[in-house]
Image 1: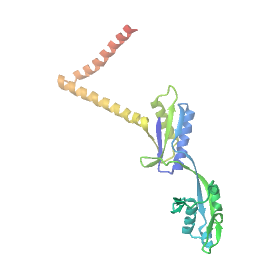
Image 2: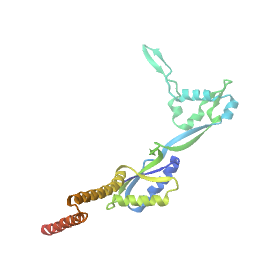
Image 3: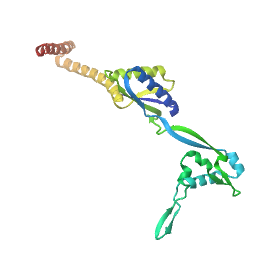
Image 4: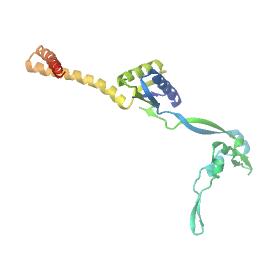
Length: 240
């Protein structure tokens, strides 16, 4: 079973609402497993710069970006020849100096006066978590919940429960949709009923034209299913 929680709200809010539905579903006893494809589990470090302090020290943002790019970017500069071989020149700080994000504040930057100032004097680090992928469904921020049904639980029963729970717990602006086999089940279920009704109408009109009567088709359409059911009942008794 797959359902999609979608909204125009940010992904963090979508993850919060979808996780609430996931926890409620696991407590219902209808599912043995549940998972979401929107997870905030990727660590990320944001570097916040004090631009006013940097300007007072004579550090421009362009120079700061160039210095950090040279120390961490690992960009190709040129080649040099040594002992008959050509080697690529890639400027970068040593590996021991870039093993963790906190070490970046120990890097020194050049000011307009030629002085060296540590990055920690104008910058602070903030550790946050971000999703590995930002999911969308029909141009809305979304999270897909996947469930494994408990033994004896029908797919329709599970979808009805999820639909009712979403109607009771979702904030305004959040909708529940379907994906995968669940979407096919919901769409084809209503289509099958409509197709069956059209088939009955078509059969009735064909019989009415054949017998030139509006009464005889009713008799035929009622008698044929009953006769088949009666024949199957006696066949069942004979087999038993």
